[in-house]
Image 1 (spheres, rainbow, N blue to C red):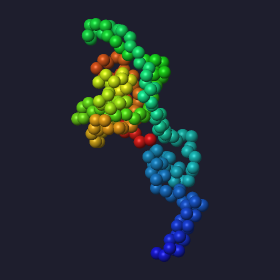
Image 2: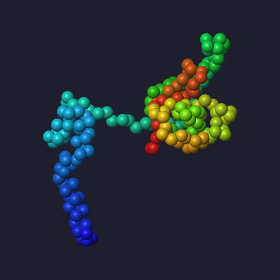
Image 3: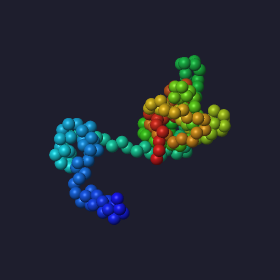
Image 4: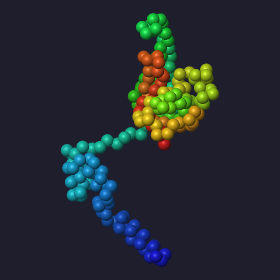
Length: 190
């Protein structure tokens, strides 16, 4: 095909898409409408642009907010009695600003620390493994337990820089679990 014909073809295609209602015949739109239910599919194929009041509207997933490590600096400790250990122990107490963050979806970057690769248990640290919380460099606000929604398809390696998203959970009950937990974790690409 000559250059002149290619230019003519692409120009005609542009005007066809831009100035006609060819998008009504788009299969992607029909697939979305069919997924929303048969009545919505019938209305979409009939050319109704606005959904009817009785049609369910599919919610749009909200993007997670960025979480900075400094935002997690709201952990104090209170001495409480532990029935399990029959002695007084220090349990975390959270500041109001940290409590407001509980249950919200965030994304954060850090260094992966594999705990049990076979079972998909990982932690995310503010610093590399050589200077992590377990080695005395920082406090519990510098590490987050990652509870993946699905077992990761690939194993992560120690000190791999990674950005993850998840729902922030605060633990002040289970002393065998991290204080900060990301539930429904997934790798995140902003």
